[in-house]
Length: 176
Image (cartoon, rainbow, N blue to C red; front, side):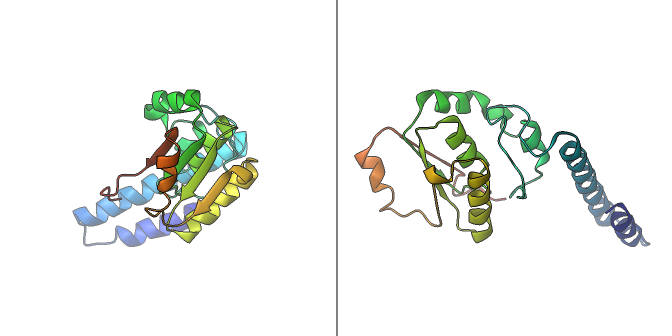
């Protein structure tokens, strides 16, 4: 990997110099460094989340849908949401609907921390659905996570039947 990145940098920084090329080179080095740190952590400590509310979650065999796995593995990814996650866990909702579940980090983490909870994990990306299923199986919660694609108005009918539920997800207008 290091040799490949080095060659990409040599090609990228060939004359003529430009701000755009330098920006691309900086991004490439940042990604390389993150992968190097992640690989070092995995080699040293394995692929379990090290701290935070989802400590102990097996986070193996999947890639992070957004960003790197590193913040998730060290338990830092959800740091700013920790009080909210702790409150969610303390309430023990019988149903959590995760709209835009990505690889399932939150869906699986919440299912692990709330053994009586059913989770509906929804994402339109088939790869995300497969990764969520993989994480759910690795962590022994696959029987309580219902993975699907689009959530419809009909799916939300369950909310009128049961007021004690939680819906989480990305705002629809958020762009990546």
